[in-house]
Amino acid sequence: MEVKNNLKGVKDTLISSHCELIAVSKTQPIELIQEAYNAGQRLFGENKAQEMASKHAALPKDIQWHMIGHLQTNKVKYIAPFVDLIHSIDSVKLLIEVDKQAKKANRKINCLLQVYIAHEETKFGFDPAEVIELLNSNALSEFLNVEIIGLMGMASFTEDQQQIKSEFNVLNALFTQLKTLSLPANVHMKELSMGMSSDYKIAMEAGSTLVRVGTAIFGARNY
Ligand SMILES: *Cc1c(COP(=O)(O)O)cnc(C)c1O
Image (cartoon, helix red, strand yellow):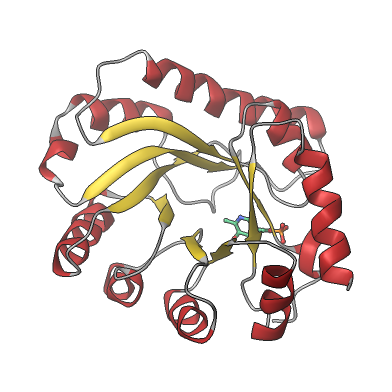
C-alpha cells in the first residue's frame, strides 16, 4: 500500500512534465517490486548486473529493466539478452563489450553516455569535452549493435540546491548542443537521464526526460 501511494505521489509531481519515471529497485525484494508493478509501474532501475538478471527471471516479462550503476565489462553478458537501456556507459571499453554482447544476443542495446557533472572525485563518466570528441571521432559508428540515445548524469551530493541546479543545467546545455550537431547514424539525442529522490524536481525543471527514483518510492534501502 505504501509503495503504491508513494508511486502515485511521485507520478503526480511529474504529471505535467516530459519525464518518465524509473523506479529504482536495487536491493529491494521481489515482493515490493511486484507491488509497484501491480500499481502499473513498468520501468525499473538496478545497479548490479546479477541482481537485475535474477529479478528479470523472477518477475513479469513486460518489465523494462534499466541499468543505472557502474557496469563492469565482465558483467555485461548477464544483462545483454534483455536490458532495455544502459544509462551508465562511462568508457569506450565498456561500449565495445556492450556491442559484442548485444551482437551475441542478436539485438541492439540502447545506451546513454554518462557525463561527469558533479564537483566530486568519485563519480564515473566522460567529461563534456570528451563526449563531444567521441561523437566527432566517428568511433561510435563502428558499434553496429549499440544505439546511443542520450546522456545521463548525477549531481553532487550536497544540500546546495543552486549547485545541483547549475550542474543539471550544464548537462542540459550539452544535450541541447549535441542535438544541433551532425551525429553518427546510431546516435540520437532523445533522452536526458537526471534526477533522484532528493533532486528529481530540480532535474525535471532542468529538462530531464528520465528520473531515477528509489527511496521516495520504496523507502530507505537495507544494505
Ligand atoms: C540508487 C540510485 C538512484 C536512486 O537513488 P534514490 O536516492 O534512492 O532515489 C538513482 N540513480 C543512480 C545512479 C543510483 O545508483
